[in-house]
Amino acid sequence: MRDDTTQALELVLEEARTYLEQLPGAPVRPADIEAASQKLDGELPETGDGTLAAITRLIEGARDAHIRSAGPRFFHWVIGGSTPAALAGDWLASLLDQNAAAWDSSPLAFQVERTALAWLRDLFDLPAEWSGVLTTGATAANFTALAAARQWWGEQHGVDVAAAGLARPVPVLSSGFIHVSARKALAMLGIGRDTVRICADDATGRLDLAALERELRALGEPAIVIANAGEVNAGHFDPIAETADLAAEHGAWLHVDGAFGLFARLSPRTAALTAGVEHADSVIADGHKWLNVPFDCGFAFVRDRRLLNTAFGIAHSAAYLPDPDEDRLAPAELGPEMSRRARALPVWATLAAYGRSGHRELVERNLAHAQRLAERIRASSEFELLADVPVNIVCFRYRPTGLPEQALDELNERLGAELLADGRVYAGTTRWAGRVAFRPAFVNWRTTDDDVDLLLETLAELGGRIRASSVAEA
Image 1 (tube, rainbow, N blue to C red):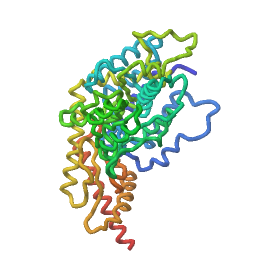
Image 2: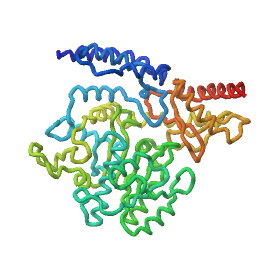
Image 3: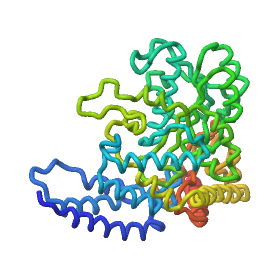
């Protein structure tokens, strides 16, 4: 094995130059992606081809085998791109290859994460005394924050859950907006994903505050309440301030899942939606959504750091590990990972490069994109807006005139599949109040008005083709 690292990186750099130049106009999904994705398959070689040949093959095999989710026209799920500073910071993180577990393993990663978390608290106007830790994403962040909530719940019953485990059910309440990542976290914590008591007052899942209050009163014991800042179908919010008041009144832990909705705090236009977050006991968000840093990145903030350390501390430490230091408490003792990538470097880089105003401008530009699409839908005779647009997600469906209601779901399902296969823009379907709908989410710093307009134009074009072929088949 020879050291040809520099030459290999030069190959990647050359590919990056071409890739980034073409990204704004390239199809999100290449036409031959299914066949292309098989090119790198095969048996493990007995003797390898060498670094440069392998990297050349990897680059060529990857070109038409991936979804360009970093580009400006990926509106599926809620995935941002990577700002130039974040991408460069991520490359540096790979180059330095630090284990961000503790000060002793990497003073650089430790201090940069501490600073990045302080900047994020400032960015989101969260109390400075809250503790935090970077995670792999929103699911791990929910797991981390809810582990602290579980530890708190145990202490209310005189039990150290981290040491002794659970001996009784943990009551959890939320609205119908609760996300699968929170349910998955509850499953991993042994609380159970199906134990959540849903307090909803309509088919969309909107929170019923009166029902929540009745449940809390009837329980008569500590509970965990999950409020949702931005659900994924229409971007709607639970009433966080009112929920915080109820949680405080009944001695409940309030957790806020703000995977992308926490960023609404950055704009005066939407900040009111997040009022009350500062009164929560924990809150999380994703970095690879609206912060526009590379995968994988999330962050969890908890009011009481002691609970994170109790839940994730190394109680039976290996002899080679350093003793705990209260002033330099290891991130590995605040979250689930022991070996941790230095994901703070791209977070620090993008915040240092663009500051509060740059990230506010990104959020407000995406808010404007959502309103632009909503206005075009309202003005169209072919599309129907299904919900209001509080932030960056637009929930609508294709509804050409003269088509009966019962045929619309099937038509929109087919149109959704055609849109993904077409590849020019990428936006999937969901169900909102029982109806099949599109729900494009705008979180990418590269997205332009033209990209937004292309979505509706493409849907109209494909919808027309589907209807014409249906008439021909009949």
